[in-house]
Length: 234
Image (cartoon, rainbow, N blue to C red; front, side, top):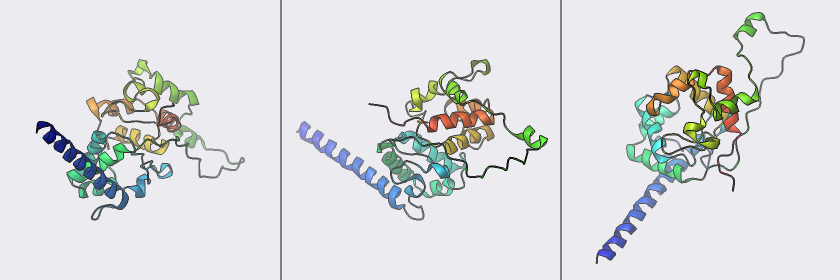
């Protein structure tokens, strides 16, 4: 009898779990109420849309995704697109769609850095002295790798991988994957932490770390992680 009840309980638990994921899939693919389908901005497989700066959601942890939706809903994370959407979702809706995206596999191929759209200036036109003064200092391609793997301890800036793991594939529920996100998205988030438009995260780390980076260093780190594979090599 005990075994029978245990089997019944497991069966009900499985059905409830499947129902949760099915509801999350419906929200992702078709929306709910006034909320549009998540895949409109985040892609049919949760891979994100790099050119527009919409992030990858596939395989990010469900607790992490729920926290981000809650932050959008209460206004502590600022986004003109996501704030009204998160507010329109119930707590149960947020849990269901988070579980759905957490169960999706990470994208196979890394995002390539977006190519510049603006045409090159004619060679005869030289930048003014004021423009040069305002332009961020260029950095070498190795700067992003150095910051990601070694940090800059003279400024008490640890390596990105100390929290986000080797290759930026994420660690636990608090430190999400960076690999597989677009450079635009990553740059925007580092800037948001610098300006206080995104909550500082566990132990207030990210706001402190981001403010130690120059504009050029932000771009260098973002460009590095967008080229790394989101899946471990087999």
